[in-house]
Every structure is written in C-alpha cells, then in structure tokens.
Length: 43
Image 1 (cartoon, rainbow, N blue to C red):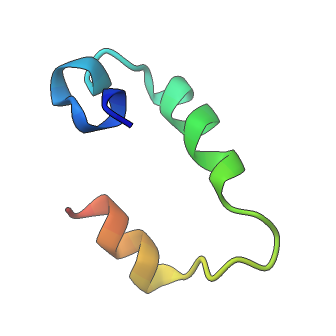
Image 2: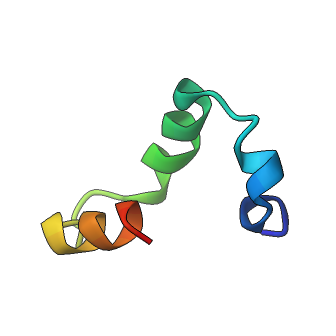
C-alpha cells in the first residue's frame, strides 16, 4: 500500500498499468457506481 500512497511512484505508471491494477479490484456484483467513481477520480 505504501507504493500506492506515493505520488512520485504512481506518476511513473502508464495509463495501461493503472487500468490493469484497478480492474481486478472490482468483482462482479460490487457496489461500483457513479458516485464511487466520482469519489475515486476526484480525490
């Protein structure tokens, strides 16, 4: 988790890497919705 809290390290990830990391976190039937995405994207 330390890696993901380090903006310098995160900025080295490509967009494709970020998508690859992010997608498996949500299992089918999760409570993924617009409000959650807005919260994630605009922190």
